[in-house]
Image (cartoon, rainbow, N blue to C red; front, side, top):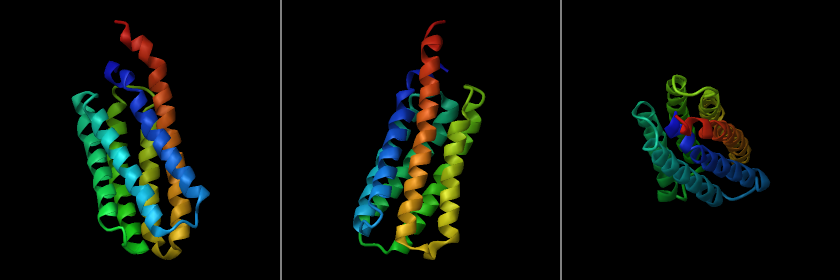
Length: 180
C-alpha cells in the first residue's frame, strides 16, 4: 500500500496527459490524419513509459500487468510513427487493438489491486472504457476519421478523469500509509 500511495502522482500524470490529448482531439476535429497520428503516437508512448516506470514502483503482484500496458502503449505509439501515411482504416485497427488489449490488462491489474487498496474500481473503469473504445472502433470502422477523432477524444478525457480520481484517492491515503 505504501508503494502505491507514494507514487500517487504517476496515475495523475497519465490522467492529465490523457485529458490534454482528448481535449486537443475534440477542439480540432477536422485535423489531418498526420496530426492525429502524431497526437496519438506521442500520447501512447508517454502513457506507456509512465506505466512501465510505475510498474517498478509497485509490488510484484501488479508489476506484470502495468508493464504489459506500458509495452502495448509504446508499441502502438511507435507503429503510428513508423507509418505516418497509413490509411485511416489501418490507424483505426491499430488504435482498436491497442485499446482492447491494454484495457484488458488494466482490468486485470485493477482486480489484483483490490487486495491492496480500496476504490481500485477507477482503474477497472478506465480499462473497461478502453475495451469499449476498441470494440466500438471494430464494429463501426466505416464511420470515418472525424467520428474516430471525437470517439478517441471522449475516451481519452473519460480515461484521464478515471486516472486522476484514482491518483487523488492514493494521495489522500499517502500520509497515513507512511506512518507505521
